[in-house]
Image 1 (tube, rainbow, N blue to C red):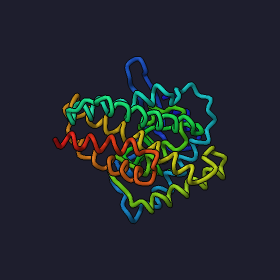
Image 2 (image 1 turned 60 degrees about the vertical axis):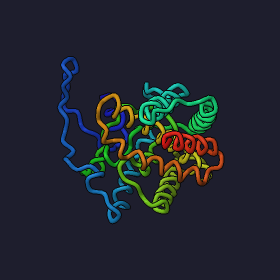
Image 3 (image 1 turned 135 degrees about the vertical axis):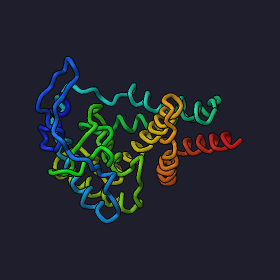
Length: 266
């Protein structure tokens, strides 16, 4: 409720709360319809839908950081990253890191965390992706924002285009990122002053999130008995491999993943 009220201040379309009974856990909300972006988006309408999504993102990123929200700090970033070895490597692959792998993992984790912490901060939705955007008037309706924090400026824009359930050609993503970066800079949102610096930060932010989500999907399978999410894990490894190919500073991650693949095969 607090975050819905906060986001509404930016003018974006979040569910209106008409009445509440917090003691018994009831809310009366308006209905944003039954079609998410994920239901309707395709290569033909993606430009228009993402244009609307960017306007919502830019709107709430301009909010002053005065609400009592947590920050994306070292502890949270590391806790998220550790989902990968704990649930994917150990539970899904059946592998325990040896000393060399643990050292590689520590180096990768430190690099990703340092990059995230070095970024300018804004309000971060944390799951700003087509499944949580509703086709509505005004467009989009924004859902699933209860885990919002203050954190890296590239986080939500990276979520939007490196989605769990659909992928886009790299050249389209690059054009959408440039469009966002130009608009954000013009509005005074603290994006990196150089686009290549912004893209690098987005790349590394994406790798942190992808490793976290791979761990979460493995946890959903092995703890909660829902294996279907694991079908989307190769999509995240494809995102990671594409970043590794253009970011030599991720060589340790490349070596680590190669050792996990050979170990899993064996």
